Length: 148
Picture 1 (cartoon, rainbow, N blue to C red):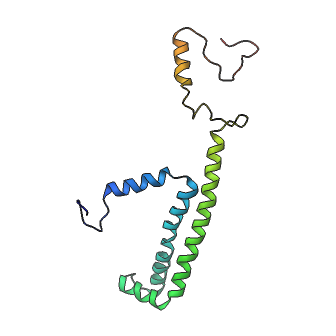
Picture 2: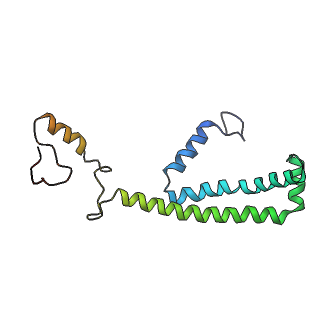
Picture 3: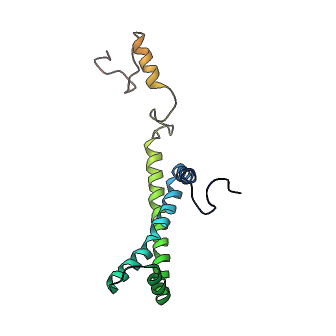
């Protein structure tokens, strides 16, 4: 039972919830979903291009008649672009996830880097400087002249 709005109408909260779910997914799963959504524009683009070539406005009745006239063409365009965009989205998403994982992981130890860990290093660094204690070295060791 829907309490607000019409049954077939999307609310802003529903759209925001779906968008947040998409953003929280790994890119290897969200990019193919976005690719499929974008690929559905290809048959619409073909419809507009054919209407312009015929000197027509792409009205609903003209579009339905053209799709009935060339169903195999529209099906081919729809399925092929969905397949290609889903495969490319998956490949690019896996690559993005891999690069992101490598950028936040120390290559030697395999642990998270200081930028992603919740160690409180920047906060503790500021506390050390405020107390007159030496600040932690970013390099992890002292230089030949010594850190001042």
